[in-house]
Length: 178
Image 1 (cartoon, helix red, strand yellow):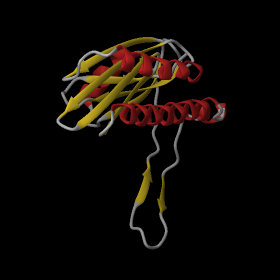
Image 2: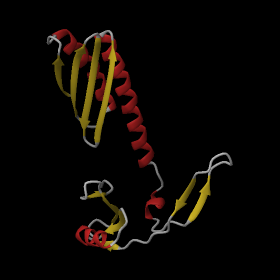
Image 3: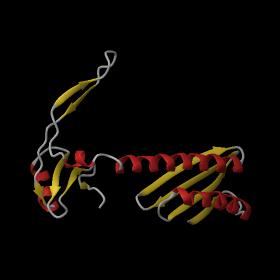
Image 4: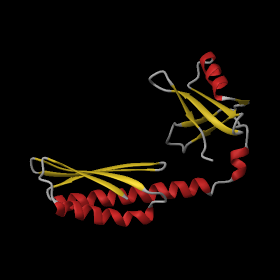
């Protein structure tokens, strides 16, 4: 794992750098692909702050902790990072083990589901139909409709994609991995 350690308001210490790097090397078994770790160790008055940004293939995890002791802050942020990594790995496992048939279903039934009696929330499911088109055609369709998203089958990959309108006015595309 490639690591970068930055010190803010703290004298650079080989001890802290070695301590963090040794602990981070244990995370390699949790990662499928090589990752890059950016570590920031800082001191603000009496607070010792440890922040780690872990960036990898389809992975971006941030963790930040503070304590009165730098070693404790590092241990806390590493624990938080480990929990997030395990949670992320479990999500990936759950997605991969999902039914293939559900991905092929081309329509969604319209129904209203109600939570228990004490709750007033409802889930409205809409029936949509999507047709094969390329991304440029989907953008043109998006310009014609006033919805925030458009579900379509990408004619190049034959997979379901979602084109959505971002808050800055541009478009975003959600597509499944190969």
